[in-house]
Length: 358
Image 1 (cartoon, rainbow, N blue to C red):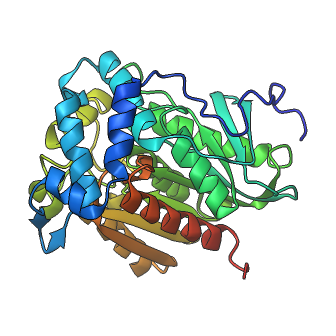
Image 2: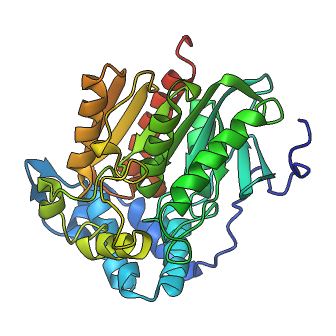
């Protein structure tokens, strides 16, 4: 490992959870116990099956939502700074601790990042530049630490998880500019990161999926692949899924309204290419994509519409809907059905990043 902008240091335990947020032992025990109950017991606690749009919500997800409702107010009802702390606690509670080969703290031109290396991987290989979700106002390296560890270890692909400026402290296009700069920095420092320069791709969930899509569109052939997990792709259209799932399934209309009003100034064109990938004409050379959506997610339809738009433009695309999941499942690794979906996404990343692997 060569020296980066600042020395790369082994600042994080190989197997421990890096997150310092405190989760009460009683709360953790309650959640962990609920997620390991047999399905009939979970059904008894969760209530009658939830069926919407021909889909049935997974019973463990339904139980998680019930526990979350009992735990306290939704983050969007709190002042943003307090909401950030609550979301951090939620992700630690539901994500748990995940093993990975090695984690290093590195410093890009834009700030702090973490480089995750899978167990047993020494030779240069592909690299995923990852942007966390959180509605452009929440989230950081810690909120997505468990999810990124799991993705890295299961896919066998190095991951560089990067920070970007959050709203309302930094308004649009700050996050998009930071995302582009981080990708450029990764390409410039590919050798030091253990990456092959021509096998660097982008990925992210929710708002981070938006940023990854923006970077892929802007950089075209410089980006090798893109992994989009329930991405935000547009602001104007009230899709059917936004109407169906506007409340009750974690991501709410109130959350999205707060996120957009905090990030996007009133005078910004809602179809700006750094904001709404679905509104952009797909240029030649855009990277192959895997797009994951959740059945009970307001962003479901626009994610699938974006996958279709890429495919119509000739971009190799694989799109999967996890019909029994909600927005946010990427961070809920302690929920068995969500963990299975995340394992599937990790397998998709492996195939994207290492296309000739057996």
